[in-house]
Figure 1 (cartoon, one colour):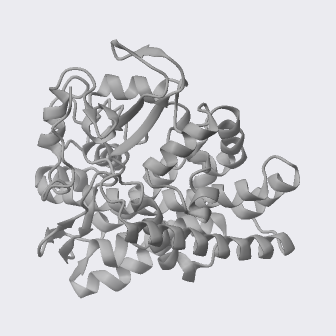
Figure 2 (cartoon, rainbow, N blue to C red):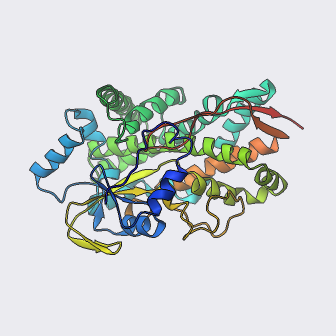
Length: 404
């Protein structure tokens, strides 16, 4: 069965939920542009958790890999091919596990907790500047800057580079959207990866000469110990920077929008700040920032009640899975105290999001401070939303705040 599904149509980015509901009601895994779409919670979780389902195409013969690369228009991009298409996100099995182990110690809750004073200080300084204005764009003036500053601080990049790295990340990641692979976006993605590479090479040289307590210095130690190659180091740091920017910005925007659209839940959270960790989890469930990921069947297999040949490609719709009524009671209700809340916004299985603890920490600090320092927040102007299937979140969210 072929899915009648068009994420490029106007209005999809603002309100994709009816489209996902129709997909969930469609039997099996319907075909869409060469993907078998998984939209129900159990199907998405089963595919994402199965190690026979892989991100990369190393299981295929070289000529077949090249054919797929060209069909998806990921060829003739030397920097993109070298540092994005072969990053940890696109690797599977022992190579993926090896690279993940090299950086995992920096993403434990204990290690990340040491960032709380830095995040709190940055947020407080930003709110000191913005709240007296009374009106500002939550995305452009606040959310768009915080994740880049924090992930840059963790890695060791120059804070002044954060806005540029956010732009490079957006240009790189947006090209993965199958509905937006234009020649112009291809050129911009390749250029962004090249510039990112050059900046990280400079940082590598600086930390090689003078190590610090940051991720780049630790990765250089792993490189010197033979645990990863130089290209793998650059690709891994680049991927962490990509992942640490856009998705967190998007969920901050959609999270505040959800609170503003549900004033009873905003009031509940103001009255009980201890709900904040649960509220942040609900923000991720209610409107996941990363909507669509793929997996390939690396062998003939049976899953989701059907047999599939080796090479079948599946499209995993995490946002749809998180609104599945078979997995979440009253799934379209935003509930800051929802428990349990075993959502799939961070994926599942071997590729579960490495930075999920950092994203939640950023959110908890930001929203705690914002609610503590304001008496009221309201939308004050049109909200623009991202389009396409790769990411969900507001492009702009103008708000007016009043203090106590």
